[in-house]
Every structure is written in C-alpha cells, then in structure tokens.
Image (cartoon, rainbow, N blue to C red; front, side, top):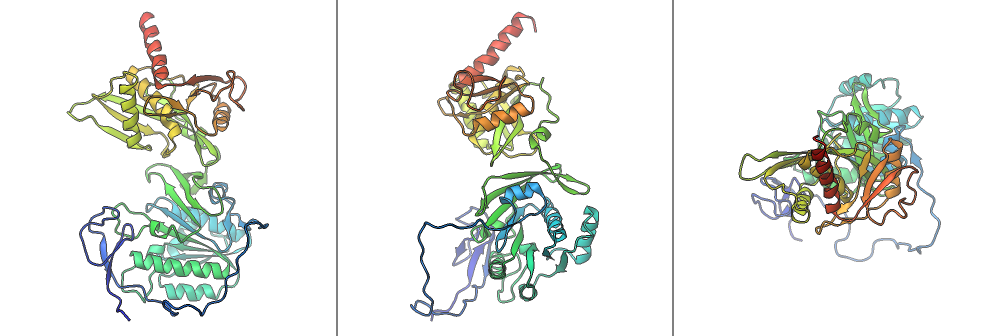
Length: 468
C-alpha cells in the first residue's frame, strides 16, 4: 500500500498541489499554499466490491410532502431561507468579520428557543460571558437557549450526541473548530472541511438543523466558506459596509428555497432590525433635482426593489481617466460608456466616471443598464432626470434596449412609492399600457439608447432657448 504523502493546499480556494509554489494556479493568489498532512482514511474496503447493502431505486413520479420548517421569528431571515430552517439541514452563513453574522443568529436562536424548541449555541471565538453581554445588549437574556464555548471537535460531537431533542445548533465559527487527528492548524482548508463534514453528518443523523458561521477575508489567510458550499444545503452571505447601517443577507444557494433572495436589515444599537420596505429606505434621502441620478426598478429574488443610481463625471487631470464603481460591475460600466460614445455620439472619454448604488446594495442583473445609462447621460448633459420616473432595461452592444423579466412587479412597486412614469424596453407595453401596469402610469418605450440621449438633448435645447 502506497504511503500517504504530504500535500500543499491553497487556503483561499482549496486547490491541492504535490509541492509548494508561490502562486496558486486555480485562483491566482500568492503565498496561500500551506503544507498539510493528508486526511486520515476511514475504515472500509479500498477498490473492492461487496460489503454494502443494496440501494433502492424509485421512479420520478410520487408525492413528497414539503419539509417541515422551523420559523426563526425574523421575517426577512425566513424569506431568505425559503420559509424557515429545515430539520436535518446545514446552513452556511458567510461574511466579513464584524458584519453582523453573530448578532442576527443570536437573535434568531433566542426567538426559536422562546417558541419552545431546544437551541444550542456553541461559540468558538468568544467566552460564555461575552455572549451573555451581547445578549443583554440585545435584550435576549430571558431566552432559554443553551450556551457553550468549545473548539475541540471531539468535545462538541460528544456533547451533541448526548442531546436528543435539539432543534437548532449554531456553530460560531467553523474556522475555530479543530480536529486533533489532523496536523494542520485550525482555520486551514483541511480542518474546516473535516470538521464541517463531521458536524453536518451528525446533524443529518440526529435530525437537528445546524448553522455554520464562516468568515471571509480578502487576504485568504483563513479558509473561506466557499470550500464548504457544496457540502451544505443553503449558503447565505452578509453584504454591506461596517460603517453603513444597512445589511443585505443574500441567498446564493438554497436546496429548499429560491436563490438570489435577499433580506434587508438595519444595524442599530439594539441589534439588527428587519426592513419591511427596503425601497422606501433606499430612496429616503434622494433629491430629485440633481443631475446624475436615476431610479432603477430592480428585482432581487422575488422582491421588487427600487434604488437610486448616482453618476458623477469630472474632467480627467491625467492621461488615463478613472472608472470608479461601487455596487455594480465595473466591466459593464465600461461597456455602457463605449456604447454611449460609439452608438450615441456622446463624448465621455476624457472624463473621470464615478458610479454609486446608493444604500449599499450590490446590483447584478443586466436590467440596470438603462438606469445607469440615464444617470450617465444626465450627468454628461447636467440635466436632472424626471423625479417621478423609474428606468429598467438591458442594453446591447449595438445600443438596443432589450426586454427584461417581471416588468409588472417592477411597475407595481414604483407606483406604490408614488412614481408616475417609467422608461422601459420597447414591445413590453401594448397599446400604451404594459400587462399588469398600474392605471395612470405613463410608460415610455425605448428601443435604442440613442432615444434616451435624444430626450436629454431636447431638454438642453429647450433650456437654452428659455435662457435657463
């Protein structure tokens, strides 16, 4: 039998190499390869048939009851999870340190415990007294949940095996747990993967839901939760700036619900407070008489969300103009700028361009192209957009505006917040009214980006004629 050899594992992406090298070929990170001993092999036949029991195969037809849910008592968290936690499931919650992962999980665990379920909260980063201090600040001291501080996997497993009625177990965080059978340090890929696999196996065998907390660092010095995404049933990411009060909880994987669903929270002195109407919150400080601003009617998961897109153009002082983007794809901004110059005759090449999605939300859908273009043209012509108008539509390389999905939901959300007009792709509307569009909303079809530029050019000409 061949002897197991030492291997080198990238701590950023988990790639394995037989010898050390300075740069990981898989993710491109430097100095992230760490020497690790191989994971001990479990007992069992190697390469031999037999010894197992026959697996029963069934057909595709059949009725399956939906899995029972454990409501967390936090509507925004239940929305992201698909209705609540599922028994015997594993959920991974990732995000930057200090973003609010422990806070929201402590709030959810306390509410579940108050509902009469057995909840175990295991902290590997803080002592029990520290968790109690946070609970006192959040007003959760009357919750009957059980606390423990431990990092040794054998101790944690032995304790959980003695619990027969546990409904939820929170492990904060998985980077601190270590298995003594491995020579590598806690937080490395081998330790994180082995410890998480054992905890998930135990959760599915015992029937309790387990939530694993994982930190994400830009330096890649700790094994991020991405190496665990294929092992868990749902992966949630906390987004937002620690200096900003808004937090976005986004589902990127969910076997029991919709992906790309978001929950919006506001960080306060008493913990995270859910935001039932994020559109009104994102537009609360908007000023409609400023150029370079446009309102985008977007869809996040199943929820329509209205956000303000801000653009600023300034003459470039150097040879290479800057392109600074916050909350959007910088490559897509470069594409839009090229289309505006090549297809619409708008000269923007000598300007520094700054683009910001107000409120800390990150937008990924192509439907924001038209709103971004409106903000850019508004900034270039120094003409504000209509304060009562929303924009949505995808822009192609030839400048055409393409249709997007769920136009009705976008328009209804805009009407609910008092917007009276919308600029949207052509052929969405039929006879001046889109299917399901609110009564009284004026719809402007745009087939090409040049039509949008012409609207602002016409406003500029009228202003000059009137002496404005």
